[in-house]
Image 1 (spheres, helix red, strand yellow):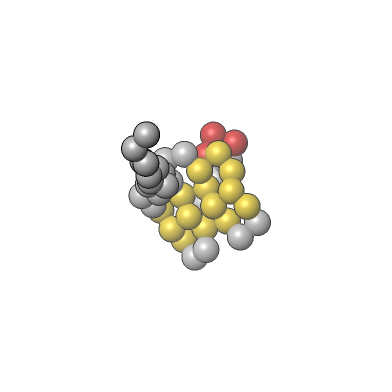
Image 2 (cartoon, rainbow, N blue to C red):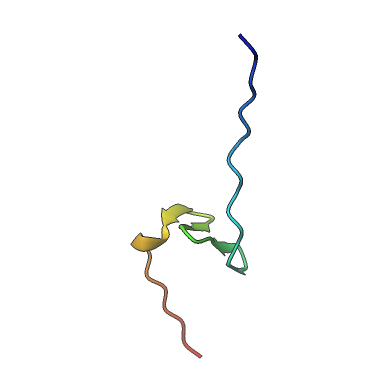
Length: 46
């Protein structure tokens, strides 16, 4: 049986990074954890 290696999944590219908050197409990552983007509401004001 030939030995095969499975590569780790490629990380998704970052869409936005503000400080230590990073956003991809599917998740938002903060120092407190990672959540699906569909579960997060983001509001900004100028």
